[in-house]
Amino acid sequence: MSGSDTGTITQGVTVQRTGEQGAFGGELLTVNFGPHHPSTHGVLRLIVDLDGEQVKRLKPVIGYLHTGIEKQAEALRWQQVVVVTDRHDYLSPPINNLAYALAVEKLLGVDVPPRANALRVIMCELTRIASHLVWLGTSGIELGASTMLMYCFRERDTILDMNEEISGFRMHTSFIRPGGVMADATPRFLEMLDTFCNKMPGYVDEYEALLTMNPIFRSRTIGIGRLSAEDAKVLGATGPMLRGSGVNWDLRKNMPYSGYDSYDFEVATSDMCDCYGRYLVRMKEMRQSVRILRQALERLPDGPVNIDDRKVLPPPREELETSMEAVIHHFKLFTEGYSVPAGDAYAAVESGRGENGCYVVSDGTHKPRRVKFRAASFVNLQPLERMALNHMVADMVAIIGTADTVLGDCDR
Amino acid sequence: MIADSLIVERGVSAGDAWITVASDSAHDALAALKDEGYRLLVFLTCVDHLADSSRPTWPGRYEVVYQLRNMDTLEQLRVRSFIDGDPPHIDSVSDLFPPADWDERETYDMFGVIFNGHPDLTRILMPDDWVGHPLRRDYPVGGEAVEFSEEHETWHTAPEKA
Image (cartoon, rainbow over all chains, first blue to last red; front, side):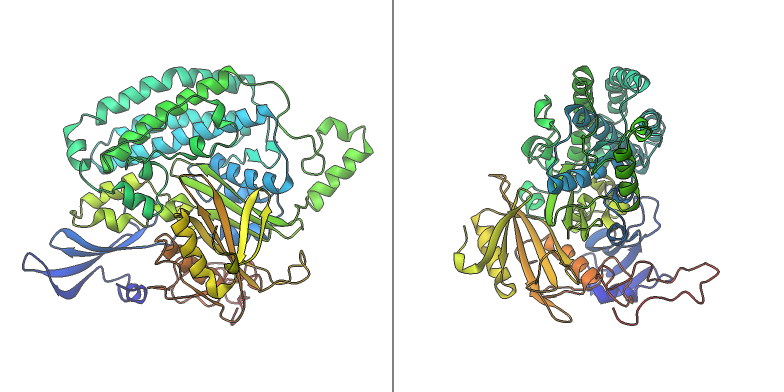
């Protein structure tokens, strides 16, 4: 199939004959899958050539959730872009914020205080768990374990409550910003985090009791969607897709940022190279994230959560009443914004889906010249054909599910 | 390091190493770098330097950027290549790096850069019948018609040809 052929499968027609002979004596059929199929995790469309029920060719068609985020970012001031970074991978906003913040901080040449780094790590790990929980719940439903969603969303709601406590927002927190974080953690947030760290390992045991040895779940995932380590590397897969194929690669370990090198945790890998392997990796990652959260909570350093630079971050409210200079800085920041030295920088972070990076180009003005998001979902969708080949059409649900793409991230 | 004859300029920006190569030797340079161990193409994109005053002159309006990584030594390298023309052309690297396939389609879609030798250079994010390339700097924000709005009939600010 070439790109122009996709137009011939119009919305009204969902099945087309190809005229090619299949191995079972029948004719290959082209079937349109999505974009509004309940198991496509957003609006992903697949055009599949089927021989009987076997997938012979597959072409993902994306762009249905394209929102022009990169174009919008060019029209916003540097500090306003944080808000749009929340919205591309809508299941892990703080991780996207962090990628953008790190890239801008690289250009500005600033380092954030230790407490800000610790809070960043806490928010990122909470988000990673929340994102894996959404994946686990929806994948469970798709593979027949419909109670999974109830359990997973119960814990995810706790995380959203914590988001609300620390930032005022449940989902799009915009918590991590160039120069630090939005606010310090409240005592209630730290209490909630402590309770969460105590309870979460038990909950993960609960999920595993439901799925890990479940014969239906195992037969739907073991040996399905195989992706060898070499293929995964060549096709540029990152995150659990790569680690599920046995490659020990995690940006938090290999290219640490925000002080991840000071935390003691293991990189989850699995040699199964199939859907089940990716499931195991994500389950283990949730446990490791709790481990990081516990360490971060125990040695949360004191001190400021923002850099002390009035050219980048506004002065505290109290200062405005006594200092004329503070008023000027405040006025300048909120009318014109700050400018970033000309140049370009790339910062990559490990999200729940893989490497989410941000490439920013500055022309020295108060708005970015270019903001490019390196989306893990966009790259991780490309091995889909390799994984789905010669599998039954029903297995595609498991394969798309364990690839864990967020189409908002993919289409941006 | 690859042959110096291929490198036009080199430097470090905010801690990231980069080199500039001529657009007609970009494919050769990337092939050589891949052999050296930079086996992962992290991303490929384009930057439009229309009316960019941060440098007195630019070698070309469009800067194609390749971010490479050596996963064994953890070295990263950014390769830039400047191109001009309407539409601008550069050789495809999707034969070297499979992930470049979609990245090049996206860059074509958003900037109108033609990648010579790409197997299927079609739009990927915008609809197939879209006119213009949205991430070019002369394509206005809010340039598309807003459907279902009261001003729907009158608010068509999209350029005929961007």
